[in-house]
Length: 243
Image (cartoon, rainbow, N blue to C red; front, side, top):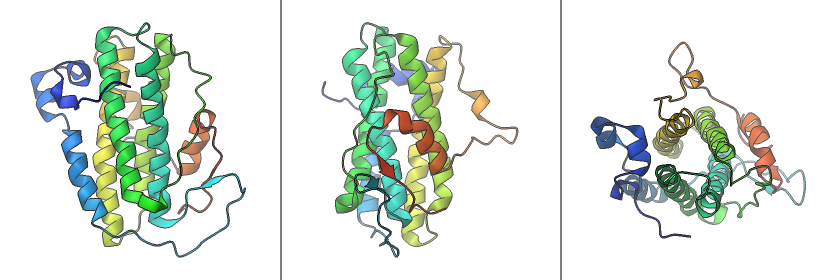
């Protein structure tokens, strides 16, 4: 894997895809923000699960319950996205233009940062590394790569939107919600960039994902993991997550 470069250190990539100077200036400085967020989160104690329910299957990875369960849920999704973009960068050079590949490299760097953020925040409560199944993706085909990226990014935004309400309303829960809000805004920028690439730079941003009230869609963990399940080989028990 190539050495990761902070997104803001490149002139092309995602920033280039997003267009004009104002957009570039306002692009979230994720690497720095992540470091600050990690420090904040790590200095905040995690809620202990009050209820422990045995996993449905001994082989299944149990996300846990309460705030820890939701953090592990996000960690699972970030593992999936990081693995996908890592594979794209490694295998799709022949399918993508140089500019498109720079976008993918930016997205990979962000998703790896998200994954490591949750891993560090969860500590010994983190679920193990998940096995992915990308057998349905043709990494040598541009359309397959971009459509899968669109699926993951749109799903990621909906997942964070749906999970926010599940955090406790304690101090720690509010801290997690704040961190989730900072990450979902980045995921939404990713989704817009992918929509724009699919439209061949016709400035598409996924307007179909926004309802008449100007709100992005939200999905429950059951809906999200059902949709993402085809790409995750590891069995996941999410039955103990808050409802």
